[in-house]
Length: 129
Image (cartoon, rainbow, N blue to C red):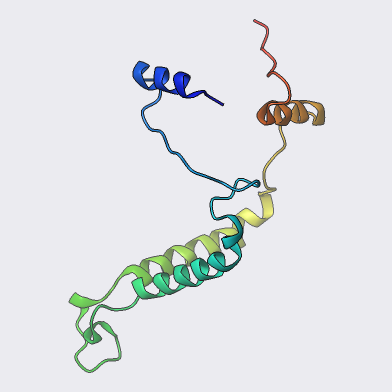
């Protein structure tokens, strides 16, 4: 963690160009105890907006409507559906047979040392060379 003077020095030096200040709770959450009621609202809002953005902008953009016009059709659901169809077919025909998920690189001891270095409990090892 930087002191205020160290932060000022790095900003003046140009090594830091953006500073974000936030107050978090003990678990590092920005919402504190409010996350329990904000998270469901945010989830519902995302679903609502996703559905809203794939709706036609006018009734004439609905294919079974009497004044249907291809010039006002919202192509977002068509392209998203097409991509999902292609990716699903690729997975079903090929990837599910060979894709094994993320591959672990390194031994358990190396991974524990890396995690400990990220937590700040030990100094990272230097590579000899």
